[in-house]
Length: 438
Ligand SMILES: Cc1cc2nc3c(=O)[nH]c(=O)nc-3n(C[C@H](O)[C@H](O)[C@H](O)COP(=O)(O)OP(=O)(O)OC[C@H]3O[C@@H](n4cnc5c(N)ncnc54)[C@H](O)[C@@H]3O)c2cc1C
Image 1 (cartoon, rainbow, N blue to C red):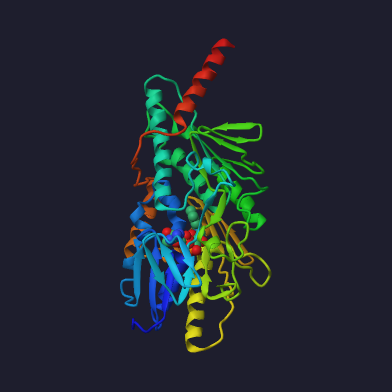
Image 2 (cartoon, rainbow, N blue to C red; image 1 turned 45 degrees about the vertical axis):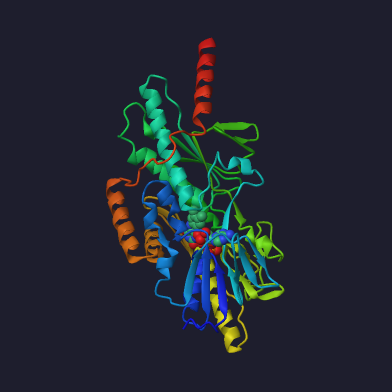
């Protein structure tokens, strides 16, 4: 199958789009080189579960080499692509040049701080397993530091967790953190009351889940409030400090700040030299190729394409997967001397989870909220999770934590300090002195 005479397809990125393209092409007369800077594929929709100690990293990530192990025309290389030479048709890694006949770039996107990259260490975003573990560390550590301080008679710190961005990731983080403080940890501390933790969700626009219909945004907000989350819309963040978020003149102290606001495409998009949109996504042709380079395709979160109604395709896994299949199919058409096909997205619906038995779902004109939406969300995510073992483990863990409120992965690893803590204590001492003076 993998004859040296066969054309070589290089795929950058073993995420949803790149893997799908590799799977489809595995049955075609091509040699495939799949390059990723990580050795694993991450199931990003469940990252928030790792960040909130519900499941362990290994249950939502799988080695790319293992996923494609039966596909003998696929080789996997670990490495970070840095550049291209589209004239010579090579992909550049720091110590290697990989030639291609066809190139599929599926390098995805990351979080953006609206030009304020200095906010990143203070307010981590959620994109990788490493990010999820850092968020888990900060959240669990905040409770521990508060307990230790209160136990030593040093006074109680008000724990505020502020989440910036009311899209699906911000909503699921806020809902789950509310459950952790009100249910999971409620009876485990002696000097603090985890239930008094404030979970505050800030959204710059007029409503949360802005890409969903208005009735579902309203329902999501109600479900969040029911869980105890404070939702603030039209709340534009203007600055982030070690222990505070500023919105103009309003200053909100925070023990933990999480960032779920902007998205920026991989910098590889700009390196292709093609036109990009404001988020850095490549404006691809309807067949997903790059203008002026018919043998180079861009797919997934890195591609910018509108549907027939002129609406921008969302940055979600089904779009990336369907584009992966479509780009692979167009390569097959080329090899058979057939005309290419334009990409059409088949939208099966959208689901956003909020917490235990709380979610919203949109299937065309059908909109559902609450338990039924949550069940649909649960089964869709279990179904698409890679590996039978992972599906079974996650299902059992969810069933267990549904009935017991336990979260099994509550490990604090790494440093035992928080960027906010010194500033929080200083503010606490200052306000105490003011009170005494007053
Ligand atoms: C927290 C979170 C929750 C989400 N929830 C949902 C959800 O519930 N439902 C849904 O449909 N979508 C969800 N999404 C969006 C979905 O995950 C993305 O749309 C999807 O992953 C895009 O697929 P992709 O192949 O374009 O990129 P990715 O899946 O991000 O894959 C990109 C790959 O490229 C690799 N890479 C990047 N740069 C380089 C480089 N220079 N060299 C080598 N390799 C590189 C990365 O390591 C990665 O493996 C969520 C995303 C996040 C972050």
